[in-house]
Length: 108
Image 1: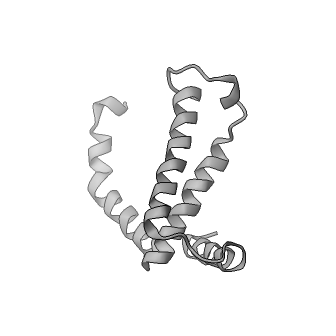
Image 2: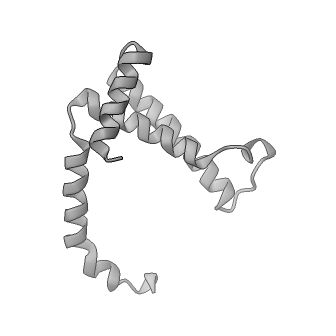
Image 3: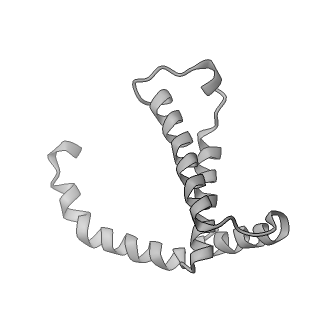
């Protein structure tokens, strides 16, 4: 699935199940909450913090999908074509960062 299709699927879901989009500030708060949940899993599962028993059942993929859903909502309600923006960003990073990363001794 491409990003444009994902944006359309989220929009259809909102119109079918969600009544309407939450306002942008509410979605920004939701995004922050979802990113925090991802951070908690990463910090405990892959970082140095110990993983609590209650955290072991948390699904990283599900939490990342939650982040993606809210990002797609924000893009839809602010008129951002994320497919176009992502393609431009990837092209920019490829041109700007190619040699920088190859020359970074910390990565070798």
